[in-house]
Amino acid sequence: MTRILLADDHTILRDGIRALLSAEADLEVVGEASNGAEVLAMLENTTAEVVLMDVQMPVLDGFATVPELRRRFPEVRVLVLTMLDHENYVARMFDAGAQGYVLKNAAISEITYAIRTVAAGNPFLCTEIGLNMLYKAVAQSGSIGTDLDGSGHTGADLTARELEVLKLIAEGLTNGEISDKLFTSKRTIETHRQNIIAKTQAKNTAALIKLAVSRGLIS
Image (cartoon, rainbow, N blue to C red; front, top):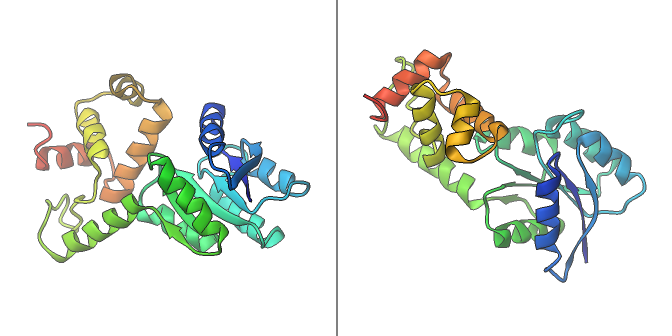
């Protein structure tokens, strides 16, 4: 039996994951935390093989939590479950000591496979990120995309959802208006916007509009 500690500041997401994992005979959720500080405190008295953890949390986020967790509880393995899909975040979390990285939009079958893989002592990187990184490597070796500012960065690695958000940003919508239009949370839109900026290295909204025009998203 693999004992799992869930760490995410959204109660409804923790409830959903717990319900899904309850169908797996070899997986057991033994505790829940809403931030990294609670994770560290709970591990003092709770035995867990895997911490399934978000990156963006209040009080103590994933970047700060993982190194301390690995120092104090080296036998516990960390599987990141997040919306942040840029390779910079992936690299930072693996450098901090995480053993696995999976996106929240992954199928439950991939999440459970990731838990079992990490619990067995093996690294895991979800399919979507792996394919995006492969696509980016191919794009950078060829001539795909449009140079934004003469730096050579094309922005060719944006996901379909990020392109959709980019189009709405370029149309002048706020994060709140975009979240209403796409039927998702404002925080999710803020994450997409952060990913877009990180991927394109755009310095401001004007640069994002230029990118949207270059990709034919607006005229």
